[in-house]
Image 1 (tube, helix red, strand yellow):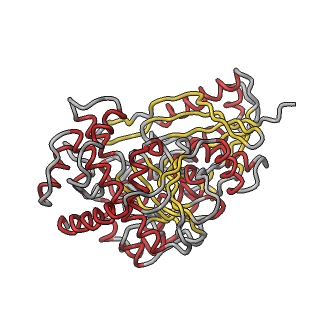
Image 2: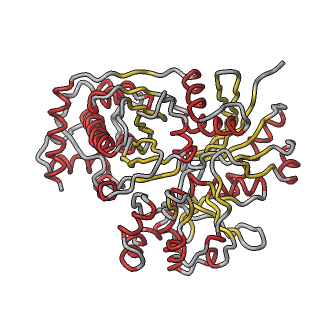
Image 3: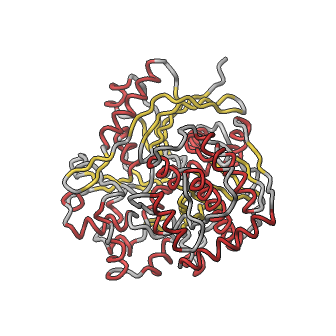
Length: 493
């Protein structure tokens, strides 16, 4: 008898998407990529949009594939990037493609809202969410300010994963983890805040029913069944925010861990039972996002491999092979050039190499002269910034942090993993690389009764992957480098 259970995950990022088949067999989970496709930004009329219909088409294409192979999937779950949303009319139709968070309409909206509507401290005291100009609250404010026709005529506002689930099932929900990215949700009540909604001219009825990861959204509509050849397969709410799904897949043994979701962005945080909203967390711009089983992801965004990715696009003489590039960089003396990766200079410069050189010149340091020196500067600096944020977490956590788990694509970067262990003075466990898909699928497995809880999920994930351990080294050198880093950051101001 086949004791395998099959689950279908849709994992959508801001540049590409995938559909993934997860097979749970006993104490192990295996992943198979079914389809991969681009997620293209559309620029038109001075605005940026996502093509929600193209994403829906790709989900249907993936479902057709598993149906053609006669794979009996138990359920479907969708996770995406945060903050963006879709307007639905009272006739059940989408009111134009959704705006993308990179749309320039939000550039001044945050400052305008916080100055004229509700103060920054008041918004943080309600939501505990870090301030970024593209948060949903500021997108909606900017749209209202411009007289956006879709907003005016919206009967429902659905966050992107919820909108795609609605397209599959016809059921309108508001999944907790994705809603928490909006800066409209109170993590204490786990509901959208009425005062913040009213400040935008909105009511709670504009949003779907609040659901937690693992709750049933609905079954595939007759239309989708006809198109795909599948039956009434259930669609479950997973951690709809991709980082929420990734953190759910951290293969920790107990709560005494921190995580670093490493990629273009780095997100470093802890998992807590309750939100941490204090003057200190406000001052340091930490965020409280929704997690599994009522937990909170207390974290901070850090500029991750964005720095190196941008440099690699600019270089004409650097080796294309990543291993060769790192090998060359490691021949460069340590700590001769240090930057704060989160300085505003690096947000979106026209030339990243020049921005790094300018920072070093302004702080009276050695100016990196080539790709090897720039790469070494980036690696050293990221590890030192990780130490700074890790120190903040240790200060604010209600439990001792004994281990740092690095997940996501960056967990393959052995050199940076070792530097992170050295810098933080903490053992690092690297893996899984496919955290988001694993978290999505394991929530579905829990909903199906195949696993008990988040710790059971994490145990099975740990059984299914190879974890790599990095032990701290060179403590004195890294301690001295951190003092230098702090002095440089203070000097730059």
